[in-house]
Image (tube, rainbow over all chains, first blue to last red; front, side, top):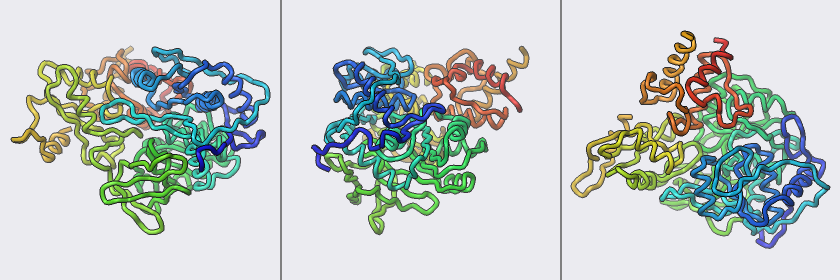
Length: 437
Length: 88
């Protein structure tokens, strides 16, 4: 779509239910009024760092910022050091949050207050609406700009792909600021179909209660870890229309178990923070992924990229892909040294660089165990040379520099690393070290 | 009091086993935060603990408004919470 095309803030009719706050349905009309009321109270200048846990407040803050022409910075990591990093590096002027976090910028608590009937503003497709972040190889947050047109196209594609029925209640377990959570639980109701659930929803009992409190049909948007916990606790869920999973590979056995337990298709999304959701599959039907409507893939032997509607340039992917028939593809594995845990990606080289620059650390390396992709409990390991430091002290220092999911478990303190004559670490030796964990 | 102490010890063992921690159960400071600073657990661990607790003690942990996992504040807090709610 042309960058100058104008797309309304919401594609929903004023009387349609856009969200459920507890038992209270919120129509698109009321949402626009509340967003306009909040927009009028926002500071003059953005960008705004929005890390509201309540999905409705997260959406309201995002919409209010859009109305004021301000960019929203999305951080799925709500730890104060990470938020402060993003604020500093990307010029956040203020933050919107419903929890208390001490940050070196004004933190405002958004409220949903009734306002006068408000228009549905038109936003240029090319305008950057949000910036999402990944961890770069240096450990600093890397920005990925999301033009409004790309967000709208993604939401419409998801609504079409999953044939979400009108009136569907959407319960999500992923933070609204994670790209997958943002697309499926904020943008999908805003631009596609269905009504979001404000949350919080994290544990199996939260999921069961949230679903039970909402009208059918019900769509559960979650992760392999939470599916495993749901099945493990054996908690009963009300009838579902479908389950969607992403953030980590979903084992076919787990998908089959979930389909049997819930009696519905379990669908999986393939995506990345940089590209957004770009393909999907029904996991039990095999390994072929179908690109989202409008998304194309350029697949080479060593690298692949996604061509995504609304994004200015093709997006390199962190996985190796293989072309199948009819535009479908298969995932062959992670590229290079990228690892993914808890829905976040990092490069082992980047983590190693952070580790080896810590005071008192002379040498060190991050290691991925061989079962990292298949075992939901798998963690990274690290081998470190740090005379005079304890393993706990090194981990404590790392905690301020890397996302917690990547903290090594275990961290082995060694007198020296097994380097060869030219100073390289041999892969076999590293694997042996990793296995000791 | 004896009950509380033994539940705490049992829970420490449960956490160490469920999360494959290298820490010995008796080394966990009952007053230290389980997440972030203290034991350094994260949200993946929270789900694992919820699963283990539901299997062992027959009740479900939930978020409610405790977005910062207040009941996970420390081993002692979690233990007290389980003592109140356990069915198994």
